[in-house]
Structure formats: C-alpha cells, structure tokens
Image (tube, protein in one colour):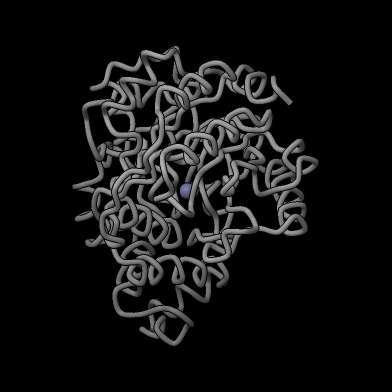
Length: 352
Ligand SMILES: [Zn+2]
Ligand SMILES: [Zn+2]
C-alpha cells in the first residue's frame, strides 16, 4: 500500500528525469502554482526525450539551456542529479514531504487506491501515464480514471467517442503496469438537472467505476435537488456519489455554500442501493461536511475516500480525507477503498 514519502534518508539518488518529476510531485501536493510545476514536468519530458550521452555532454559544456524547456532552475537540478548529488531544491522540498496530515495515518496505510482522478483528457493537468506512474509510486494498487462527461464543457468533458477511445488507452496502459497495479475504467459523470446521468447506459456499462456528481445548478431548491440526487443514486450505474454538497470552503475559486437537499432521503437511498458516499479529500472541498458524514454513517452508508486529483501530486490528498474519516469515526470496513480490488469490483458491478 503506501510507501512513506518521509524516508529520504535512505532514498537512492534520483536520475535527472526522476528528480524533476519528484520536484513536480512535491510542489503539486502543496498546491504550488501550475506554471511552476509545469516547468519541472516539461523539463522532465525533455530529459526523457534526450539521449543520456548528449545530456552529460551538455551538462559539462554548460549548454543544457539550449534544450527546449530547460531553464536556470531545472538546469541546476539536472547538473546535480547527473553528478550523483541530491539537487538542493529537491532536498529542501523533501524536508516537507511527510504526510500532509497525520491524524489518519493508520487508515491511510490501509487505503488501496482511489476512485476519483482526472487527466489532461478533461480538466486535469497531466497525461494518463503520468497519473499512473505517480499512483504506483505512492503505493496504490489501483486508480480509477474518472474524467468528466460531455455536458461539462468548461472541463473539456469527454464525448462518447472520446471516452471510447480513452478506454483503449486504459487497456494499453494496463498491458504495461504488471500485476501489482490496475488503472480502472471510470468516469465522473455529471448528474443532470433531472437526475439523469450524462453518458449513455451502454458506455457506463463498460466502466469499472462510476462517480456521479453535480456540477451545475447547485443552488436549486431543496425539493428538486433531493429528487435529482436520489434519482442519480437509484441509477444502477452509480457507484459513488461525488462531493455531494458542492461546497467550497477555501481556495482560489473562493467559497461556495453547500447545496440544499433532504440529506436523510439521499443517504437512505445511498444505503439502500449500496452507493458509496464520497469523502472528497480536496482541501478546498472537504465534502461532505462533518455533520453529513455523521448522518451518512448513521444511515448505514458505505464511503469512498477519494483525492479528486487533477494533478499527480494531488493523489496524496488522501491524507486529508483519511484524517477526516478517522476523526469522524468512520469504520474501515465501510470504506470501499480499503477492500481488496476483486471485492471492490464485485461491488461496483453488482447493480449493472
Ligand atoms: Zn466534480
Ligand atoms: Zn472530479
């Protein structure tokens, strides 16, 4: 399961490409500016595409910066890594590389994977392969790739044709990852205003995991919002109810109050249909709020602790969700992401 990120004392010295990726990862998990992270990811891509002999020659001659996307900071990292030194910038970042929060450590170790993540096919910042490599590095046994659905145009939601194409890519990725890791076919499907799901049933049938979430008309009246959520939960394709209140508690997008609905009715439907209530780990969401997690517990719901990562480093957000789950007394057995993968898939396919 999880490999600790705090053991840099024993960490082998990384090659230049790995060092640049590791820096990007550590920056992302602390929510650094995208442009800053991009500089390191772009430089890593250049390094990986450059012949090692040329890289060494350029490091010696001081001409690394003639290569595309290599700047002053990334050049210094490459030079150090080639010389077998831990780059100073990396060393500094590693000092803060322990768990993002420690309250849920034991549970975090028991989480086998993540059912909610995005790639650059929708509004994520990195290619699928980079998300997968990082998921493996943080010790996941699986990751569900859940890019957005067609109607969410602002997030470049996937049409049926693009999702079909993505499923082929997922299969190709899995042919390379070996037995210890699986990329799950998934979607974060929009819950439309009437509670219908924004993708064809035929395509949803082909997926391992369906996360259903509301992204529009979050302020609709409680009556219609309750019917909307209950209908989505009743849909036999739905496995996880994503960030159910839509609230934003902090961050660059500002704050947003939670949607209003009859939570008793919604969580009773989740419990009845075996739909997991997502504990969304994003620091700006922390959704559902404490009192609703308590209510879902009382109603007998299952839970899924998800990162909703839009960048590789954000996969570590599970530290936040695990801490909340422990603080709120959610038993491990009720958290589907602690289950072995075959049990998880049996559950996710049970209503199809
Ligand atoms: Zn969402
Ligand atoms: Zn999402």
